Image 1 (spheres, rainbow, N blue to C red):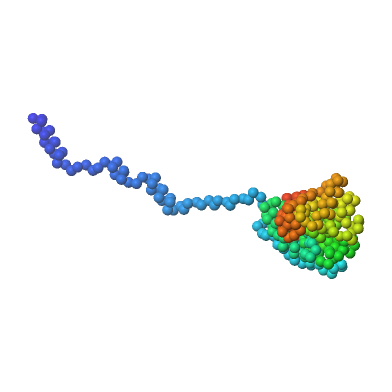
Image 2 (spheres, rainbow, N blue to C red; image 1 turned 90 degrees about the vertical axis):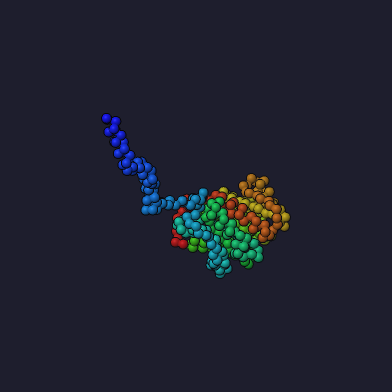
Length: 312
């Protein structure tokens, strides 16, 4: 009765305890190994921070982030004893050991060494240097005084004060470029007369000259001194020449005539007629234009300048 034995075996199996759940179900409840590893790494290894460099300027005209400065002083002269001047020194002055092109700016009658500073020339220089529109340069602004008002040129005049005393003093005591290609001279009103008088008589000493509202009104200046004559009769070589004036300037007649005479003789120069008169507002409005014109021939790369012979 084999079927009776099978019946008892099935009955015995039904009475045994149940099997544990499958191992797969237990593993499913355990966090994945990759998730555990990520948590551990997050706690023990802080994230690496890579700094983002600051943007590099399109041009870096100076080797530092400093500012230029205005200084005041006096220079000696046997003609005047001493004369006041102001000097603009550019950002990073003296740091690379090289010379700087130098612009001499002369005042008008009744003005002193502060006039160009008051017109904003130093601010214009700072802005154009730091934006690489012009190379770093020195600007020298002397007083005019009695001598400028009461002499016409030649020995013992304001011409001598500038050529024989101011320029050698600056080139001995600063990193001014002591060569014709590194010098420019300009002036406003009576100072414009002086700039033209000096440069037309000594064109081999300057790269450029500017007459800004130049008042060519000196009736005591003979043909050997008067820019209205020397511009036409002297060999000006490669001297760069710039005239500008306001169309309502009361002193326009003589400088316009000089422009027309030079044009007729084919003497190279630049002539700019602007709106405006003979006043502070006119010169201040054009300060940046003057700087751009004077600086145009000077190298942008500091490595092209000679080494400065002094320690600033």
